[in-house]
Length: 531
Figure 1 (cartoon, rainbow, N blue to C red):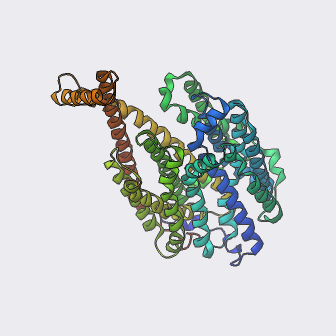
Figure 2: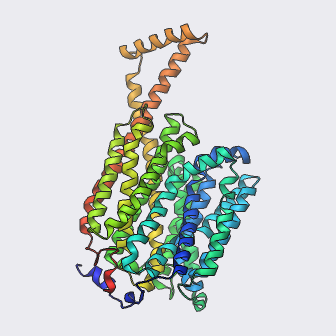
Figure 3: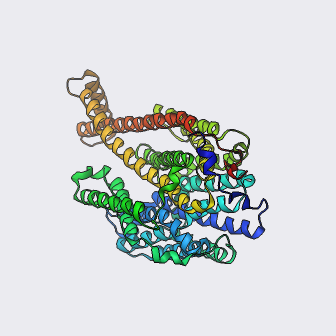
């Protein structure tokens, strides 16, 4: 087991990466990074503005979440597929098609006049845009020598974590300042520039069109059914009592059949859609596990904070955005520091500090009250932002830095998929805990607010007197309604605390797990396999 890292990096292809890199390639890579930023940002940019989109399209409250779900389902299918496609078409062709298609679908989404059109355009946007994300990770470890990874890895780590974090903030500002249409129109000009730059400048690899004859259509169908239906089940399950809902039940069956077909083809096809052999590298396997849990923390908190501020504090999307920009700022500041540290210290120690820092931030949130505002949330958000970057850079380096170049494209798709699946599983888990624990706490609290409770009756009498003096309404009914609202609020708060406590245990445990990873072969990226 101790040799896993060394052998994984053993192929002699690594030293072929020159120690200097041309300006043309740097510009091409920066264009790719910006394309990835747009694709990841677009997952969350609509989350703070769903009510505006709902009003604009006259959609029902059941239909509007599909603006998010359609994008996620389509993207989660494309991310692992992109490895095969980039080998077949080349990075240049795939990335250009992805950037141009994403831009066109963004423009179409802005023209949608009903919810059905919007869902179709968002699915196209997610599917085509998903091809940009793994390409950037693969390119970073293909074209840059290990000595430069301390600069490159923080850059892609920052984009992968910052984009979903600031998405609601950016979306809130845009829809307030202009209209919801601009959430999509804002992609058009940058998208055209990225597509043009990708076509003109990318020259990292050559296409292998012979692979098209070996394309595994059954594997693709199985993967689409498996991942797409899994995303749907995880999105819709918590709110619809899981398998009691007919749609969730049918998708769970399709997901199971899809999984069987997909894994059967992975192990029997001549050129499988996804090559799972990368998991035989111990460090890649652990890196993917950590990436999965990072997805839970990243998307989980991006969801939890706005829900708390909206439900308990009554904030609108603009106020939520202003309260949450601190995390993004902390990530931005920490990125260069984490790049510097990644070349100076043991990556496992760096990850451990990051995981424990994240756990400290979520533990801080277990002391939540209904009065918490910007200043109370300040330290947990700084801890969240800094810790996320301290984790992300070493995880990228440990997972991808010791793989031979011929495995990088497929591995990059798998690695990014684990983060998105972590987000999906995390949101489903968080939603389920919030719903179940809210009901549990409400029942417990209601037991103490009965007619037999002297404290409850005194409180009710005081509130009734208060309402009689200040309003001409039915004071007794108003007081009971107000008391019920207070119990609901406290139950909601306690369920939020339970979720934060759960996340604390998860990340603290993960901090201990870092001890099990083999030490990367060399500082600066664990990419020392070629030395």
